[in-house]
Image 1 (tube, rainbow, N blue to C red):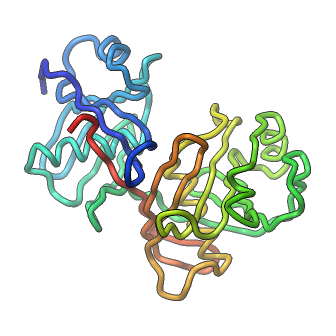
Image 2 (cartoon, one colour; image 1 turned 180 degrees about the horizontal axis):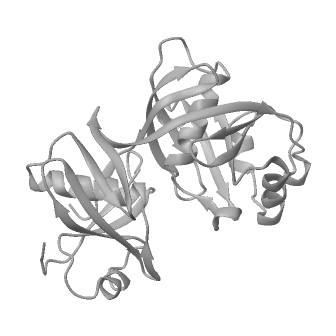
Length: 270
């Protein structure tokens, strides 16, 4: 697949009214020096559509620094790009970074299958984080994360992350990331959250599908949701970079299975 057209830029997980989400540049072709094209795209993530048929989409992903294996944000942006061009079904496989991901179009958004969220409650010393004793869980969808409930949105937004403190708590609990949450939120969100991962190479993520899937399992296991609820909307509230995510799932004892996570994607510049 070749094309000399400039990339289309999208904001993934963008909240209503804009002002947040993750920018992604999508290229229709895979010719030339992909790393150089990505470096000049002006976006933190570039996606090249290398092949497509009725059931499969193949992607190559790059940051300005080099090749990246996979990204939910990149996949969602590419799917919206291809959908705009027509001829895209509502269920297919996305291939990137040597992995295959199931994707579906539902309730007006694309989402990717995250898997099963397993959860167990833990006692954790949160004092390095400056937090009093709070309910906490270890939740995993492939990678274990420590999930902690805060009392309200004010406490969530006031939290100031410290990489060393978060890393110490993660090591003590055998986890790789930290999710802080409180029920409810702006724009009729079911839950508000923030996600941190110094051990994964970032301090705070503006929109994390995997960590939201883990939180979804906690909400199911901790009886935060009404009976019969199988879809929730989350407001990720990293300061200055708000995001909206949607999870579809089946509650099961100790978590949730068939967790799909997606969100709104908006083209930049029309």
